[in-house]
Image (cartoon, rainbow, N blue to C red; front, side):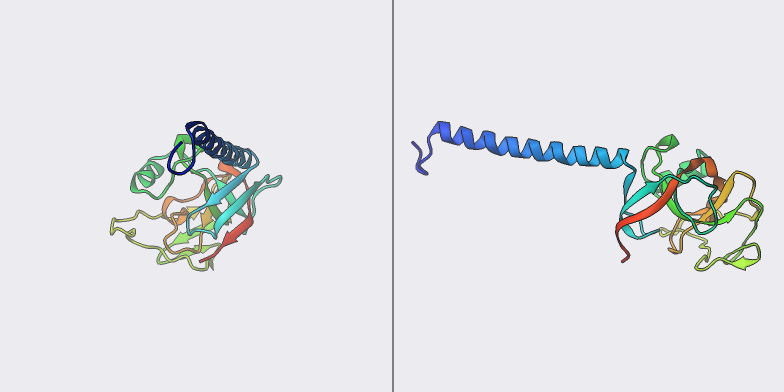
Length: 188
């Protein structure tokens, strides 16, 4: 018997119980994550929208201005560079990108002007100033403007450091996963 009053059998039994608890907790956490993923739940860790838990709700109609959506970025050279710079996270969209959570600011047929800020259909988009450099001082390309083509949307976030259509232009509606519905969020 040890100084603590345990014998080898009791100590082993205690370790096995502890291991079983850890394994069970891990399985429960993995199951919850998997069911959440399959059920369309996502955690937003970027300041483009409030931080926290969101749900992807199927969009059974064409997207309209004001919809907050989860959308997969297209596979383009601009998006590859954005991933290399750290603007995009890894995820399950094509090319391994995580979906963006953005507000639709413009739809097909609307004219977009990009200068110091963004105007769509001659109306200023609130909080849409355009930066010339990113947070590390690297130059940012910006969208030249033009008419949004059929099957595309202009996405935006009011967060000043957001990487959105101000910089990469309209993106295909085929990438829309669904509307983004807040479940449990926090806006810092």
